[in-house]
Each structure stands twice: as C-alpha cells, then as structure tokens.
Length: 207
Image (tube, rainbow, N blue to C red):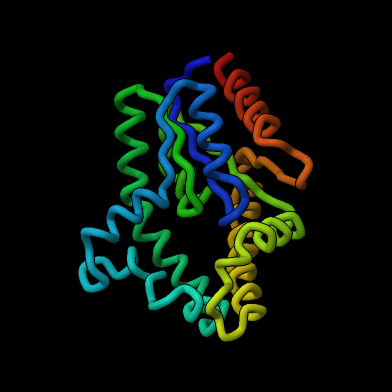
C-alpha cells in the first residue's frame, strides 16, 4: 500500500508517536519525520534571543529544570515551544500537500485545533491518547537513568508526568470535540495493531 497523504501523529511524550510513525512510513513507502529532530536542528542555528519560543525548554540541565520548575511553568514553556514550532510544521504540511508526496510527521508539537484550522485536503491526523497508568509505567521503565543527578528524583518525575498528562488530556479533549481520529493505547495494542487501525481508516477514507 502506498499513500500520497500527509499523515500527522500527535500525542504526549512517551505515548509511542515516533515508533508508530516510523512503522506507518515503512508500510506506506513514504518518508518519516519526527518533529523533535526538526527542533534539534533549529535550536542549533538559533539563539534564545532570536527565537525564545523554540528555546523555551532549554533552561539549564534537564534535572534542575524538571525538579525546580512548577507544573504551571512547565506547561507554559511547552505551550511556547509548540506555538513557535507550529509555523514550521504548517509549512511542511502545505509543501507535501501541494506536491502530492506522502509523508508521516509525528510529534507532540501538533494540536488538533491547529490541524483543523488548516482545512487542507489530503491530510490525515491521528491522536495517540494513552492510559495514564500505562504512560507512567512506561516512563518508569524507560527513563530511570534520566532522573539521575536530580536533587529530588521523585519530584522531578512527578512534575514531568504532570506535564505529559496535561497534554494527553488536552489532545483528547480537542480531538473529541472536533470529531478527529483518536488512537487509544490502553497498553494492550502493539505497534502493528495501531498501524492497522490507521491503515484501515485511510482505506475507508479513500473509498
């Protein structure tokens, strides 16, 4: 199966966006792009003075940032980063839509209401919403080393999870209100299961 659609996969950190996006790209024979890589490149050629939103999360060592910042500050910084990143993503979506070339783009910088406002043809968006207990278990298993160096690892993890769950709830609320595609991960679905859900939806839309 091949596709000329622009496929967007959004979701909270740790939900499995990149894994799903990469698998879909292989199945569809198209390019896969992770927005985190795009942001890394932009950060390398900009400064906090020229692009404060892009650099909003870069405030010293990550251990100090997540340990000492309030949840409200973490959310505010994430919002600044998302707002600063969205114009780049929007231009990529428009480019690929115009060219008729397929691509899968994943990242937590995408929000349902922003995608809906584009009103572009040939764009499919799926929102990976994950059960909170599943997300927490994943983060504890995969990011234990990430907490090393924190003066208060328990607080750091709690703050990080609070930000992730805020975003998980946000995209669920927006996608539901806009009747967009929600891919719910309750912990029982494999990457192949989720990929098949997307492929089935794409086939249904093409009929």
